[in-house]
View 1 (cartoon, rainbow, N blue to C red):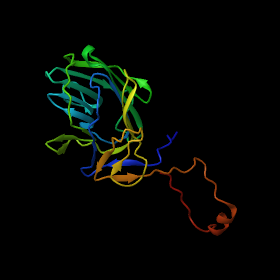
View 2 (tube, helix red, strand yellow):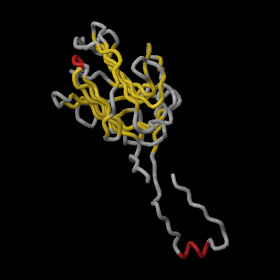
View 3 (tube, rainbow, N blue to C red):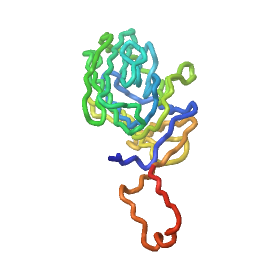
Length: 239
């Protein structure tokens, strides 16, 4: 059975990633990230990072456990506050995330001070395993933004995510406030419009746009075409 792909999406490759703007009033203690990802990545890769270490910071990694070690088919969520308190949790996915198929990932920090974190993949809640539980709760207001598809260390991209991304949303669950929504379906350009109306537009670095078209499961050649190619070999490919 073939999943229906989005009309277009951003392909992250060749040092490509997405720069997120500062999000005014972002609640580091209570938020929800949703993102669609299709990747063959078999290394530790950053799905999203936001904020600044030692002030207010969150990061979601693929193929990494709560101690920061490479662990295939896992998600690692990390929250840090201004006092250096850290919360680390991870899950071992119940599906293969690096199978180059579309997966919808949801990362929820329900209450960082209570070490309350959850992961959902394709609508199914995952078993959470905790590492350090420091109850982060003191977050300094910051002017920094973040990135999707890479950790930016002094603006040098590391832990690059290779693959397709689409439909990214960030919101506060407690206040039901939408910070940003990037549909990534325009099919061109370097600016990702924030469709929730907050004007928190993101920027693609080295973007490659992809559109996927799938042929119907059953494909019948018309009679006239059969006559034209009666003596020829015809093959039909499906993407």
